Image 1 (tube, helix red, strand yellow):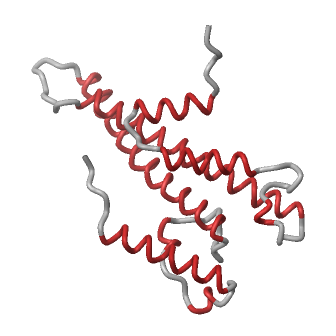
Image 2 (cartoon, helix red, strand yellow):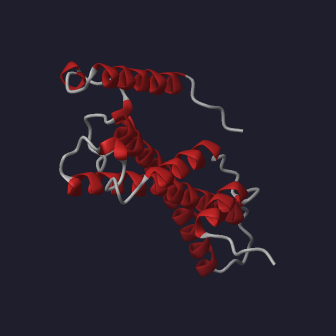
Length: 186
């Protein structure tokens, strides 16, 4: 008899079943989980935050935001799966179909579309929040938006060390490259 699957293992398994490639995301989440310690009040990388309560809150925000990426991708995948069930190879309207059935199906399609197009951008915004926290960008984690990963102003850059400025510029360059050549959807 095998050991029962943990919730984390079930999340990764479900993402795979939904066709979501997640190897890098899983590696990130596992690294963040492993680096989070009680002794450091969260993450050692935030030890420069003198207030241990603030360090604990920021660390917790980072960890929860990383987990939210997975949750949002799961939601998007499940909504897409439901949409496929509802419309599959297309929809045809049979004669004599009851109005209630038509309304129920239409509402189901609307719910699936709204859910999908809400969850996917939320996953990207959570990814931006993780990048902001890890790279120590001078931006808000809680108000993170994928657009926050673009180039910083000179005033924002001046807030960082030389190493941070290089990291921030490298991140902006990577984001710009992805925007110029987005991945093809298979």
